[in-house]
Amino acid sequence: MEKMRFSYQKIDKEALVDELLKDPLLKRFFLDHDLDAQTVEENLISFLRYRDEKHICEECTGLDKCKLDTVGMTPELKFINGDIRLYYNDCHFMEHQKSLSRKDDLIDALYMPKAIKDATLEDYRTNSSNRMDIYREMMKFINEFSRGEDVKGMYLFGEYQQGKTYSLGALANELIKKGYHVMIAYYPDLVREFKSSIRDNSLSGIVSKLKTADVLMLDDIGGEAHSAWVRDEILGPILQHRLLDHKPTFFTSNVARKELGAYMVDNDQKAEKMKAFRIIARIISLTEEFKM
Image (cartoon, rainbow, N blue to C red; front, side, top):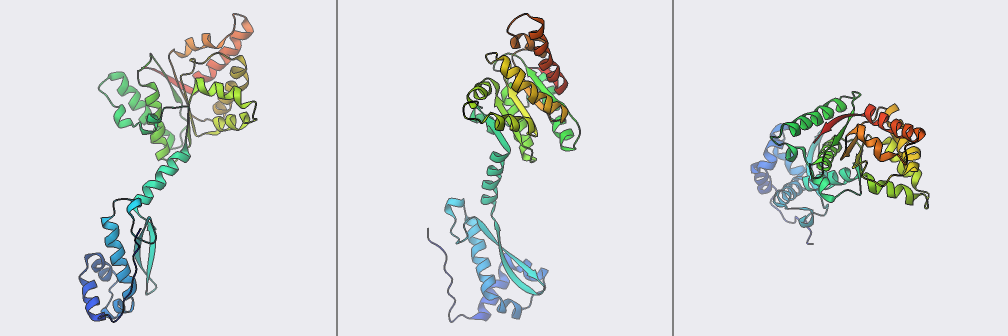
C-alpha cells in the first residue's frame, strides 16, 4: 500500500499560510482559537499534515483502503496551553470494527445459528397483537434492567417456527449494545456439551459462565434427551444461583411451564416428580410466561 510522504523544501510560507487560511477544515480551528498568521506559519508542518490526511480520510471507503501510515486513525488538532498539537483517534471504520469485537466479547452464542447475531427488534415488530405484546415486554425489560431494577426474564413457548429463537437473539443484541454480557445457548446441544465436558474437566468453567452472565437465555428447553444428572446437578444449581443473585434468565420451549415437568422425569415415583417440580418452581420464579 502506498503511504504518504511529506517533503517541504524551498516553500513559499506566506502562500501556504494563505492557502491554509482558506481551507474549510482549518478555518474554524483558526477562528475558534484566534490564531494569527505567525502562529499558523510556526506550525505549518502540523497544519499541512492535518489538512492532507484529513482530506484522505474523507475520501476513504474502508480500513483495507486506508492510505495513512497510521491505519485506522484520523488526525485531530488541539490547542493546549498555547501550543498546537496533532493527535490521532480511531476513525469511524476502526470504531465500527472495534464495536463488532466488543459485541463478540459480550455475547456467547453457543450452538446457535449465525443469523441470530443479526436479529433486531425492529425486524421483530409486526401487526400481530401477541407479537406486539411480547415486543413491548422486551422493551420494558430493557428499560427496567438498564435502570438496575430487579426484573424477571421471559418464558416463550409455542409451536416450531413461531420466532421464539429469533426473539431471544434480537433481545440479546439490544442488551449487548448497552454493555451487558449475554449467554444464549441452544439447550439440547448444551446438555450434550455438559456430558462431554466431564472428560476434559471444562464443565466447571461452563457452569460458572452460565451462573454469572448478566443475562442467560436457554433456547428449546424440554427438547433435549432427558438426563436426571443434568437436571439435578447442573441445571438446578445454575437456576438457583441466578434466582438468588437476581440475574435475569430467559427460556424458549414448545410447551408451557406447567407441562415442562413431564419432560424432566424418568418415572412416576414421587421423589422423581419432586425433583422436576423444583426445577419448574425456579423457572416460574425467574420468568413471566408468554405464548407465541
